[in-house]
Image (cartoon, rainbow, N blue to C red; front, side):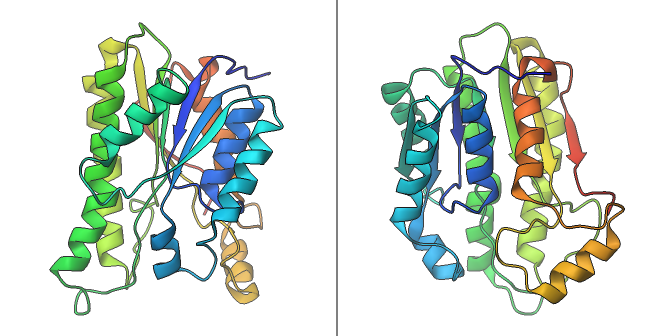
Length: 257
């Protein structure tokens, strides 16, 4: 089965690292022919990770995408700000035309159990993981003019599959993606837009120590950890014409874990 997204325009949020899930999704959609606007926010990467925060990573990814014969642009966008989704869609229209695929991949994550977190930490998670995701979907629908083929796909984190002790704000706000997916799919059913979420499970984007990788792999049916391409391949299918019959689903792509 060949997936052809030629002529489609995709927004992929949170794609600042070439080893990340967002980058893999952008590559896979581009390889199928979609033009790409990816967003990133380097200050967050610098604050929370030793793995990101270099604009050369973004530039390298964009150059890579363009070698696939598609148009590709990057936009630094702080999704903590409520006006940012509107700004992103204005940029997409100006650079590429009307988006037909939205991939909500960006997230905010900080460690903190119940006794460690505070209201500010909860608000930071809510702003990106819930509010921005809903407002991005709102902007997508406001700009949608098609009769069929619209796709909203969000990356979730398996809150229905197991607990995440020590990451309460993250777990609570990412769980909202599951609820949004079901309700929004029903609300948009008559507009030609499908709404789904992908739970990729523990995915090796460069952060896993060997011991963690081995322990996670032992819990999966397939004996390995998830790779960014695993999530990207599923997202690409859901974005395609072949994925048109799937909506309102949270798909657990976790290798059986």
